Image (cartoon, rainbow, N blue to C red; front, side, top):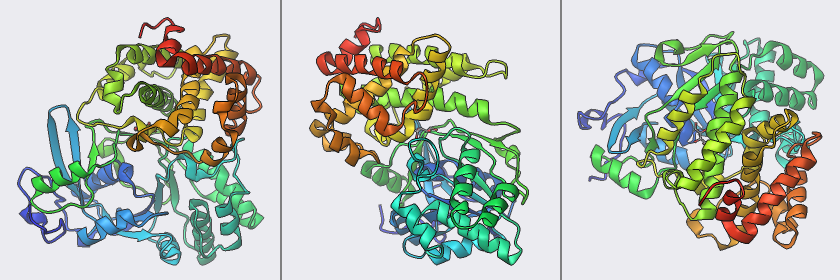
Length: 491
Ligand code: CS2
């Protein structure tokens, strides 16, 4: 391997087996600003856009914005925004260099530059992958108006820190300058993600000025979308292997699986790429697809993460190869499937069969600890919503509630975990203050439900707490084997 870096200059010298952007990057206009340029964005939306640019579109290059750290910009800056995407399945790896990210900005370094990019008339779509916790929802689902960053952004509209602050201020500036609003395309794993972000931004704007709130409520489009691709964190070994294959150094290649799906509501008043030509499903209502993905894929992912960690499995494929966990996941799917819309043609049998294949991909080494992060922000839409619906339909969601109990047990066990199996949660300080290990399972479950707002205001809450508490008791006493045995699964 040489010390030369992947860049516009070294692109032509890459091995023929590596696909490269077949377009003149200098001719591409940045029409999209993306907030949250993590690995997921680079494996998903940026790859779809790269396909559009390869086919001759020129208006939809991406300005990538990191809202927090400079890491991605530091890695990609010297590479002209180029990076490789490694598509891995058991036994094979295909490499492609993606060219759709034209430039990068780091919000904390220069918030003014981010506002300027968002206010540019040529910016017609803003996409987001900022993770669940960055939406700053309070336990009841509304905007967390007491969050220090929200308080800061309301007081300092020119120096935002949050996505809310950046979007609302730039929409306000566009409006003042007579520039058409951009379309906001949320790509995070939230239910009705566009509508949810819309509601939060209107709430935020109303705290600045009612007229601005009305403008955002009435004149800005927030189509919802369902995004899906499994993207494990890149390791040092991945960096070394990929750089070796390229013959030049890539400081941050992205690892992913062959599967890729994007379903988008078709509401783009300011225009959009011809996504439908590149595998994106454009629909009127993304709701059923979102529910299926959140409740079947992400729900079982969280289950595999917590049960896997508690059983000593470090990766999804290894946890899923554990026959007891596998049987549990089948039971979990059986509980969640009846909560999905029944009359819209979802093929859940085919979907779960595909999931089983994807989770078995041994080349991904997707760490259970990675998925375990931020459980308080993920479980409401992945697990608790289905459980409430099952219960109100008269069925006991025993498998679903074991996932909540396993999350609590995994949080309790964290002190003893190896550093590489550690995970974090925005509620960590409050969880530490609760110190549920000193409480009975019942008190612990009740306290955690209250803290995280699970089933808040729902008639089902107390029954769900009882179910979770019974599981937690068994997990504490006899581990995963005892909890699964109580569900009739032989570990
Ligand atoms: C995972 C998701 O980390 C997690 O919580 O469940 O990132 C999952 O891999 C993606 O949503 C797949 O599309």
